[in-house]
Image: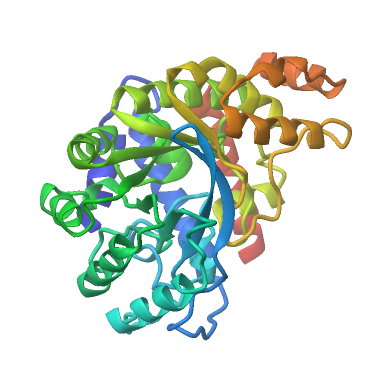
Amino acid sequence: MKKILENIEKWLGGVQHTPMGGERSQYYKYISHLQELIHKQIPMESYNTAKVPVAADIREENFKGKNDKRAVMYLMSNGCEWALKDGSGCTMCGHLAKQTRRDKSISAKEFYQQFISEFKKIDFRKYPLLNLYNNGSFFNENEMPQEAMKKMLKTINRHPDIKMLVLESRPEFVTEEKVKEIKEIIPGKHVEIAIGLEMKNDFFRTLCINKGFLLEQYKKAAEIITRYFNLRTYVLLKPPFLTEKEAIDNAVETIECAFAAGSAVVSLEACTIQDFTLVKYLADKDLYHTPWLWSILEVVKSTAALGKLVIGMFKFFPSPNKVPYNCDRCSPAVMQAIQRYNRTFMINDFEQIDCECKKKWQKEIKKEQLPFEERLKNILHLIKSEENEKNQ
């Protein structure tokens, strides 16, 4: 992890195609430092490490042209290594607030006990699709013991009613050896390996999300995954520091990149506000606002023809405090249209929706803004000044 952090800082500091190129690594260090301070405020809690944190969440997905139900299982873990160690985690991710952050790792036995207890409760005849998440990287052996991983996958492979399995990982843990091993364990299922690319642009992904990897690492992992399984890529709409227009443009560009890299599915995830995140910290200071629902529709209208593009329904763990919104009048109708789109992948409904608030959205995306680095510099200087005053 330390090497990843050093490589990112070196890359940021070395990019000199703008006048502020040399300052970029300082911005990155300060954002990472803020993340670390925010995470230190998370209250230490005692969890039952042999039980999942929440019951499986039941959702819907169009799988091979048919709408099926999927069960989303969250395993209790020690948390994402990127968030706990050098990187300080992603700016929008609230998973760490509901993890057992302790020196002793959860054992393989405890992991499997969590899994099998919840697994037995799910009727896979009704819910044939399964997302198995450890709120981190399933392929990272420091987060998921090999023994537990193999046992869980063997159990899933034996179950005749499970049609699809989705696992998640950061790209640096995706190796040919690991993917081949999983293929041998679970050869008879439709498996998707999901990676949160979030943004194509390395600069924005680093400073706005603190993701901790570069596009070339994602592409390398994509090549390995697509030789054996199906690739699912997450794209984030409107991380902090971007304008609404920049967010839309970057999401479109990233979706195009994800399909070009071989993604079987791209999931557009609009940013929400979760506790103990930099996004929440900025929102509390009125320095961040969730994206408009109009922006989601705009992105999808531009990219839906490229492949299986689904829209995330803001169901994150832990639950967000605030989600994308338009206004009280039209938001329910827009959300219903999004749900219909996810069932059919038809964008017809989007064209029929209108509201007075759409004019405000259009005005916002046309508004002249300061250049990105100037805005970022102003925001970070404002925060530093406020923190200095608080500490005096």
